[in-house]
Image (tube, rainbow, N blue to C red; front, side, top):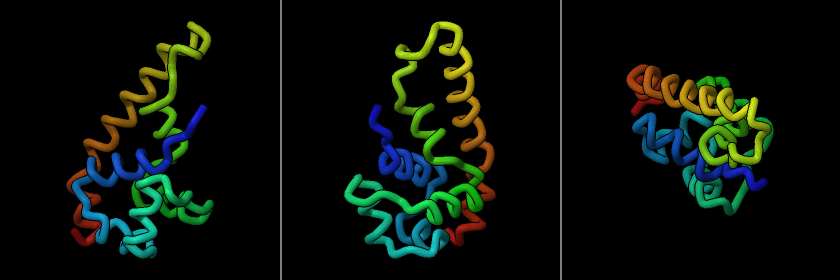
Length: 106
């Protein structure tokens, strides 16, 4: 299964209402590097993934799977739980949006 970390990073940034520059500054990377990640031309390092977790409480791998994973390939007993987890992440993102914008300096 392909993991869409770039697509997920972009989704997170846009959901939070942040620009690439503001997000890159908050993460301590160049906006060019963030652009490359979002366009799947580069992968985030473990350190950068940890900064996403620290800043926004988001594990990009888990969020990517929830948003873009093929739930139909899961055992039937797991599909409902996966759908609930995905919905929970979306709710979490919606709740932290205003606070995180201010924290990132946007």
